[in-house]
Image 1 (cartoon, rainbow, N blue to C red):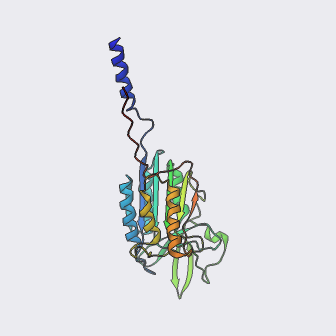
Image 2 (image 1 turned 90 degrees about the horizontal axis):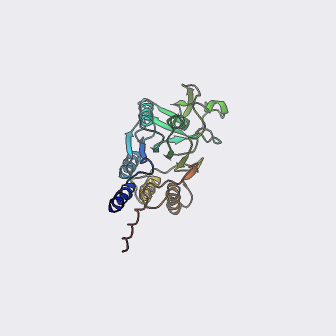
Image 3 (image 1 turned 90 degrees about the vertical axis):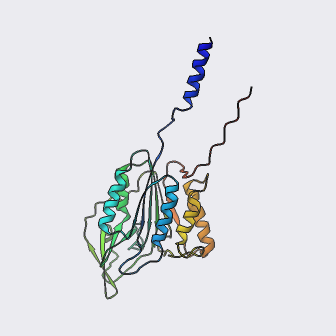
Length: 279
């Protein structure tokens, strides 16, 4: 009888070490584009650096890049994709210039840094990569303007804007769009994804905040709340919005599209210690 009791206690103790599920894998791609040939920004590199620090603290494997060209962006996406599996939580952060091109479009373009031009990359390119990678959950955070530009060579034609890449050439203050890659990317957001923009559609994003002029206001509040315990990511973005509303009285508001299938805590509260057994 004593032998049976000892074996039972041993098995019971071991059972506490059996994992319920595989540990979540965390992978991030963080980009700060600042030194544009047309209009330099002051803080995207600072923003990306601080976001990288906080994500590493939260156990993300971070790919950190600055002043990224179209070629480097493609390579970064491939590296990002190679690290993702079905049990991965991804985090994509971009700070830099952005645009929607068409005032009624929901297709955001992220502007890359080239030597003599700006290259506009559709967010649909990112969607396509994440759709192919099949992560468990995705967080996309875009710290860029969502207003639109229109020049005499930039017609409001629906077909013109639905392309993966566009090159912008500045000639006498006008905008000339040239289609350089066929329209082949997905317009569907990846499953279980939350997308946060630092500005509403048709709204500009501020490069410097009131609390810290060396960071954008969106990045400042994101860093402040990302590692708070017991706050799911949707609540993190809500608190970012509250801070920005207080600072700017509604002239810039971050907004989200939340398609997550489950709540995501980047920093869950530490479990309370189990009570000591009573005798």
